[in-house]
Image (cartoon, rainbow, N blue to C red; front, side, top):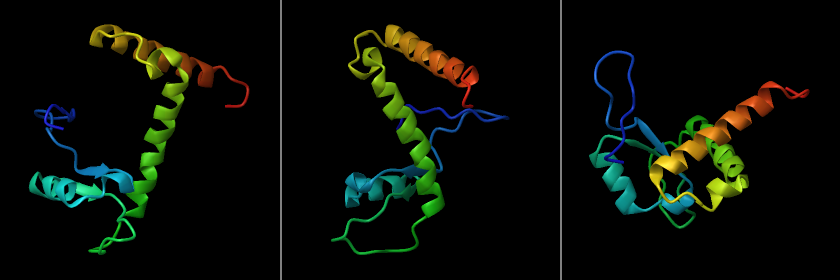
Length: 112
């Protein structure tokens, strides 16, 4: 999280996101305290054995489905899912090629 840089239209990039979405596996006191200390709003559902505090932002949580679907699609690309490329630069190149392939497939498909 400390290495993040979120581009802004004006000024320097923000270093932290406004919200962080995760599934119930990330619902721990330590993670929630770290997020609160850094001014990041947690969009993580509570486990059944935890006390419920405040309201849960369902709309923001639903938006994480887009990311989950993209990651699921990327894992179908064997080269990326198994991380054949060990160098970060090569991995990034393969990632970009996979995204270009996905975009072209959506752009020229009959169903879209």
